[in-house]
Image 1 (spheres, rainbow, N blue to C red):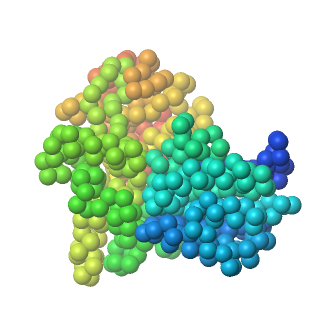
Image 2 (tube, rainbow, N blue to C red):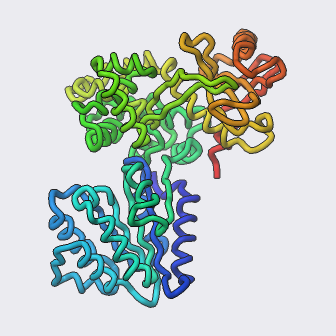
Image 3 (tube, rainbow, N blue to C red):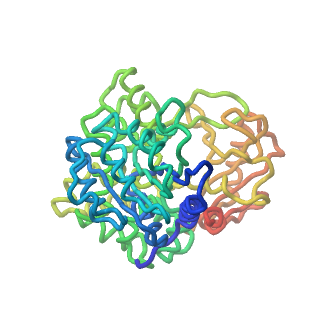
Length: 474
């Protein structure tokens, strides 16, 4: 694929921040800082590269790389600045600063004083891991030097919890930076990039997670079957290696968090079943691992949505791509690497329909939260699901005025994501039965059906993949 698709909202935010630098600031402090976070391989670096290219201002782009020592990081930083477009880049040609304080202070001298510039520190968590004092040093130099110059400092990181904490109360950089979250490309972006109809765009989202690096390998207009036939049989494809690299960077296979994540990825959703699948982990160990995974936003925790409190907690992998990778690719890398990707393809084909039916539900709920007013009953501020310990009933969609304990249920719905199988009278009867057993729902609560293949039953508000896709468009 050619060109840069999507990210209109993010580019506008970056442009607006740079415009504030151009306008200057109060008390002679035009400098601004921005903390950008997003999952690995979501396209943060590519977004910033596109931004500085369009902005056409002097800039330096430094990417940290988990060096073993501060000296090694500093050497790479000096090299990056010396080869940058900053007007004072030559200052670094003969310099070898031994501390970040000296390096960042020298950087301030290399910045232009009469026009805006951009400084990008990519993979900033690596710098903090190597030098715990880096955060405080950056704050000091920003306050004394960088904020006095017309510069936009962009700090980028994939560790979501760490990047979010940098701006928290009590941390050195508190209230000095704007925060920006870079999400995966939306199903609407994916459909536009790949020239796919709405239902197929959602399927592509489930496989790629909206990660640009993987989407770049998907030929425009190709079906899911054709793409998988090529990608799964190639051990070097981005579809195969991205998950392995992302997990290896944060959750090694032998670590407790890694074992728990793989257990959840295999389909286990409850505390007891996850513990069993992870090798009968003790309760305290499993609790710590789940806390680490949720803190990093890798696993999401959900509870039933109704007017009655519930402790039936469930866990799920938050990222669609990782859900697919952990289910179909990660456990079978040896057979893919020995040239038997055909076995993996066959396994995907036999399980795809049932797996997709559950995996698409979070995307549907997110789309419903984004729908413009009028397409759902008023007051539907929260969209979730409902289940009991025995999954009888298990309701795909519940709308409410608040969560997790609602005052008022606004709708009850079902997701049917099958080819050639519409939501019919039988499905309506099942949904009516489920509604009657949902705490807080009476016979007047509206019914919603989200169907890949249409709706033939009366008495429900029908939504198609096309309706959902409009919710993801800017």
